[in-house]
Structures are given as structure tokens and as C-alpha cells.
Image (cartoon, rainbow, N blue to C red; front, side, top):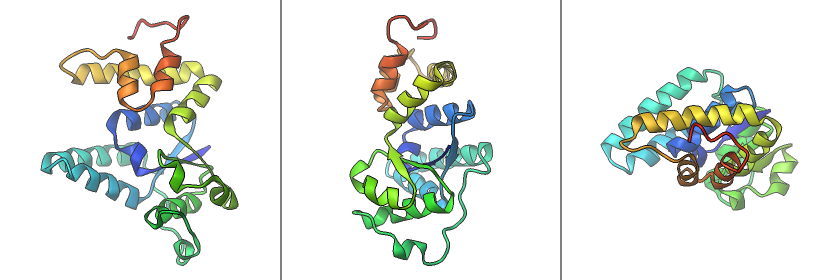
Length: 189
């Protein structure tokens, strides 16, 4: 399954790292456009020069790790024929079409009406619901991916993170609850 990642799921860091770790387990193929990467960099710049420097380094790392994720520039005229409630999001839909995506992963449901996406053979999901679905079909792969991110967050942090709290902060509360439910092995928490 090919999944276009909207800017709002590429930035923040933990959400992106969880998504890409899950993709690294072979559960989906991530896609993005150069414009999405540029939006990520501009959003991080609002934190100051250090934010943009960090984002640009992270962008360089993800593009090196996923060299086939960048979709081709949409064909001329494609964006002109598309419509979304927020005209600033049309480039995301065009990128999804250009990359032959199956799904747009976004937190902006209202800006991507299902009926409009269906006309283009696409659907959308928010990251938490998407990851819950993948965890239901491939629980060990998702748990392994999340454990890698959790371990790295603990390595980089000045204090240990509880897995559920880390995922809640990353706007993945249902995934955190599912992975820490009774009966799960909590040795990495």
C-alpha cells in the first residue's frame, strides 16, 4: 500500500519516526513531495533558526533513507482540475495522484473530504487510526517499530519516557493504549 504523508504527520518528530519505523517493517510504502518537505522545513523555522536547521537535517536523513518516497512533480494541469476546501492542500492531493498513492495520511480530515478523494481512487486516514489498523493485522511488526522509536526517545531524552505517555504526546493515544493494554509484554516501557 502506498501512503502519502501530509506535512502535519511528517512534523512532529515522534509521529514521523513511528510511521517510518512501521514502513521500515514493510507494512506500507511512504510517499511525499518536495513541497511537503519544504512545508515541514518552513514550519520548523517558526521555532527559530535551530528548528529549521534540525528539520533540514531530519529531511536529509529521511530522503536518504527513503530515496524512492519522493513523488514526481504532478503533470501540468493536474492541480488546476482539482478542488479541496482549502486550496493550499490541493498540492497534497496532486502529489498523491502523481505518486499513485492509495491513501493520504493527514490530521486535517475536514480539508480532505472522502467523496472528493474517492473520485481520485484515494482514501484518507489519521495516523492513530491507520497505525491501529496496522497493529491489528501485524501486531509484532508495529510493536517492534514502536519499540525502536521508544528506545531512541529514551536515549535522546534527559528522562525515560513511558511508552503510553510518549505516544499520547505524539498524538497517537489509541496506539499507545493498544500497545500497553493488559496482556502485552511491557518490558520495553
